[in-house]
Length: 124
Image (cartoon, rainbow, N blue to C red; front, side, top):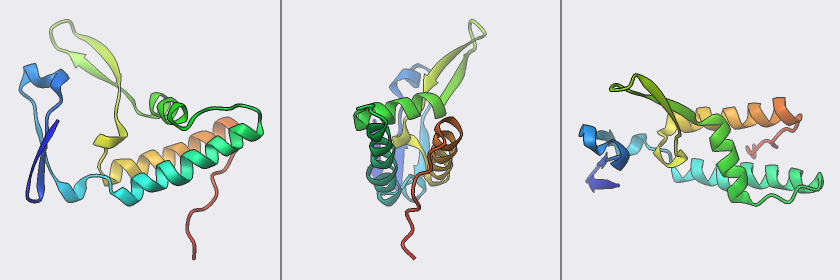
């Protein structure tokens, strides 16, 4: 959940609300619509098309969830039990820099794991 005021956005993670943690970030730091569109309208469809050529009919949302599971897995320390709990970050909560790293990680992953290159998206 988040609240917006002019150029600022405050995000609360309800799973962490008991710790009264919140994050205040300038809106311009969050991933852009252009980055989001590049991922969902260029990267994911090319991966899906390649999988379909191999005979694997995988929906877009499954590809997205699998990539997140592989590339955005993290862990958080429970200070009471001193154990780590694994969780998967959301792409919606990545800032511009983190999202660029995620896109690069997607490209590296599909190339190293499957020897598939996502076509260049620049139209120079």
